[in-house]
Every structure is written in structure tokens, then in C-alpha cells.
Image 1 (cartoon, helix red, strand yellow):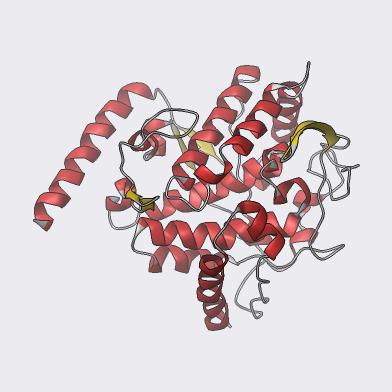
Image 2 (image 1 turned 45 degrees about the vertical axis):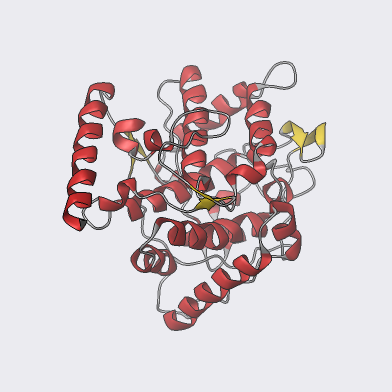
Length: 333
């Protein structure tokens, strides 16, 4: 029986690969944002600003509102990773209509794990994304206004509120991400570890809009979720790609299926699982960062109860995953 299942998965993979080859004339490479030139970053920022121009709600606003409207159907749910993968592609396609040279980058936050607020990402230069404040006043998105909040339309300045005042609580280092990929042998186990771990601590730490369902007001949301997508793709490629079509879990309480449709987009989950053939992109390897085992891994804070409540997460499930990840941190030391 196991041989038949493996053979079936391999056949499905070949069929999808053949179909994908006819769709993709080339495969775009998503790079870590620090690998882009200053001009490439500025081109990205300019396209985002153009998407956010014109009468409210803008196209940028409508993306944020989509995330707000379907919040509890796309979080703490097996569809979390497929839905956000397609959501990123939706943005990228809109940006490429403005500038065909744009490829959405990712932000490997694990490279900044020990001192996130000290990352060049938060630099005040027009080549980077600025710092924090009830209205971000520096960087490429100084005084950037958006339209939606979790409580409805209200034009406001994009804001960030670091969880430690002038600093951000530590993130998980690359070694922890690697262990999640190695140790989690089922899709739902991997999804939970990622969503309640490396995904959640970044949202919780940056705060402000990033702590709400209106997080897509901030470009950082997309760069962060592109990294989550990369980690999922890394997990999918283990075990000779047999995990590529692994998607399991339950939904109130029905078992999910590859035939399930994504909220909003009404496409099958099965059409989101191969980034090279379904969407014509891949990920460049992340650069080496400062985070290493030469110093102890900093203690990662538990996510705040405020953030857990805003996300509608099951607190016990979150704390269970955090305890598992904290044991990894202890092992790392």
C-alpha cells in the first residue's frame, strides 16, 4: 500500500511538473532583501507607493482588507501556508504590472535574531524601511498612510510599536528553523511550529499594524511572509520532494483536502504547492548572518496574550509549541 501511495505521489508530481513547464517561460528568483541593490529596493518601494496611490481604498488597501475579512479562516488552520503563498503572489503580480522587473524579496528575520531592532531593515535611509512610531517618520515609508484597521476603515499613518520600547525581543536563530524543518515530519506539525514560532514572534515583536490583522498595511508583512513561504518550500523539498504535496489537518472538524478552495481566491490548494511550476518563482539561498553558535541563543519571549487574543489563537496550543521551541533553544546553548 505504501508503495502505491508513493508511486501515486510521484506520478502526480510528474503530471504537475509537465503542466508547469508549459506555463513558465522562466523562473524568477526571490532574494533576501539585503541581496538586492539599493536601486532594486527603491524600485520596489516606488511600485508599492504607486499601488497605494489614488482614491481610497487603493489596491494596497484592498489587499489589507482581504486579510482582515478572512482572518480566522486563514490562521491556526492548515490553509495558513497555501493561502499566504497565493496572497504574496497576488501582490507580486500587481507590482509587476507597474514594474515588470520587480520580484518580491524576503526578509530572513533569523539573521537578526539576537538584536532585531538593530537590523539594517529598520534603518532611516530611504533605501530601508525605517523604524517605529505611531507614525513611522523615517525610511522609505515615512508618513505612509493606509486605510483599513481591524475595526473598519480609518485612514491613518502606518505605525510600529516595538514590544520592548526601543528594542525588539529576540527572534529564533537559523539553527531553530533548521530543526523545525528536520524534526516536523507532518505538514500540520510543521505549520503549527512555524505559525506559533518564527511567524508569531516577528509580528508580536514589531507590533503596531504588524500585530493586527491589518498587518499587510506594512510592506514588512509581505517580506516576513515570503520568508515563511521559503521555509515551507525548504520543508517541502525534504525527503526527495515527497512532502511537496503533503497537506493535512482538520477544519471544524472535517479533514482538509487538496481539493479545498482558498478563501477569496477560489483556487484549489493543490494549485499552490509547487512554487516553480504553479507560480514560476523560486528562492535564492539566504546569506550568512551574524547569528551563530559562538554565543548562547538569546531567550525568546513568549508571545503576548494580547497578540494571541487578536489573532484568535488557542492559547494552550501556542504555549505548547513555544515550550517545544524553547527546549530547542536550550539545546542550542
